[in-house]
Length: 226
Ligand SMILES: Cc1cc2nc3c(=O)[nH]c(=O)nc-3n(C[C@H](O)[C@H](O)[C@H](O)COP(=O)(O)OP(=O)(O)OC[C@H]3O[C@@H](n4cnc5c(N)ncnc54)[C@H](O)[C@@H]3O)c2cc1C
Image 1 (cartoon, helix red, strand yellow):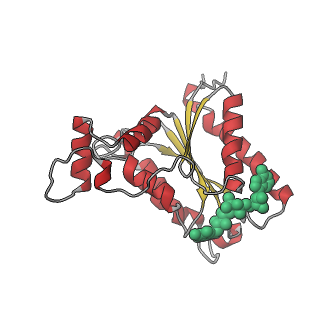
Image 2 (cartoon, protein in one colour):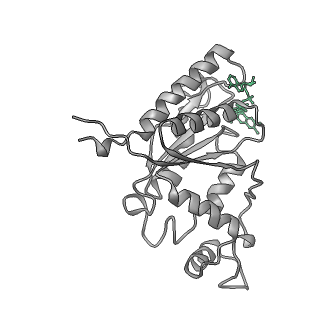
Image 3 (cartoon, rainbow, N blue to C red):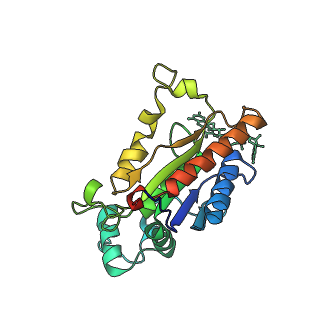
């Protein structure tokens, strides 16, 4: 049996306000490893690029209905008439270009930081990324794989069965199921850098090496194994 690793388009959606954060180190590791492996890598650096995460009427260059804002109806209209706001259009192009999508961010309030959640709110538009019965197995993003890469404040034990917060899988279900799988993507196992702010440097180095291994398997396309 031969193993095939095709050249892939990888989008790293990165949301942290501090360039020296550990989340930034994970992002940089992803860029370095995936580029060295021959993949095409695009980084959506949401804070540095000044992405506006607030969904609303600014998402549309024209309105189907000026009397009241129905987001999904306007998203569909904007898709059909090519009138999505330029920043949404650009991010949607990035998403559709990607074979693999990696979200790199800290865990904030048991979920995605508002910057990254807002990117999803604005970019995963009805009529293009989901909708009209196209979800899960028929979702428009099928064929892509998505991975969360998150840093946490709390230790792994707190996010385990019987731990203070319960299993991390429960907290991340809204993204794994409600965003990734819902739109047709394969949600791969999340990468977690537990207690990134209080573990020692040696442990952080281990996290980076473990992340490298996960990136390698993310890029490996089992379907192409012959
Ligand atoms: C609004 C808010 C909500 C939060 N909610 C939660 C929550 O719900 N659950 C939870 O568990 N935590 C929560 N936290 C804590 C948060 O998740 C952690 O502070 C964060 O994940 C730590 O990761 P970071 O990338 O911000 O690391 P930082 O704190 O920026 O960095 C950690 C350390 O890594 C070092 N470092 C940077 N680069 C490298 C490198 N290349 N090699 C080695 N070390 C490096 C830095 O110098 C620093 O010492 C919350 C924090 C905030 C602000």
